[in-house]
Image (cartoon, rainbow, N blue to C red; front, side, top):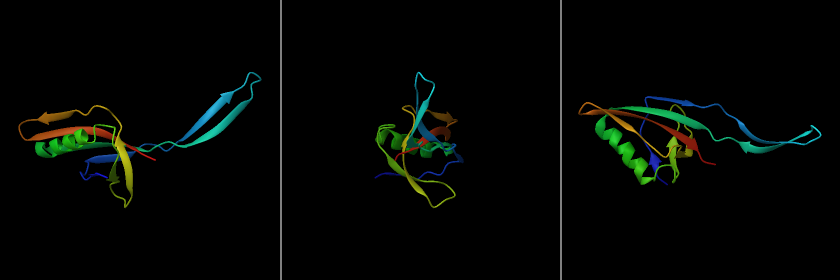
Length: 110
């Protein structure tokens, strides 16, 4: 499995949650069923030398966007998780001749 090795400028984890199926009956009663936890997500920002930004874009293309899962180590922890790109599109912004930036979101795969 491929490994995403680039270190972001900023990272944060979205809130944790559960997936709950709620069925309401005509009598007003409810039935609730736990469908498991929601996948965690991390929004990552990168800014630096354009060649590094291009490497991330090539990695995105090689995974065919959000199709193929890969491994990623959560910054500041020893945790490695299986993730996918959340979005189908990735936009890299070029800043001058030698610098660039991009933002992407990774979603945990169970």
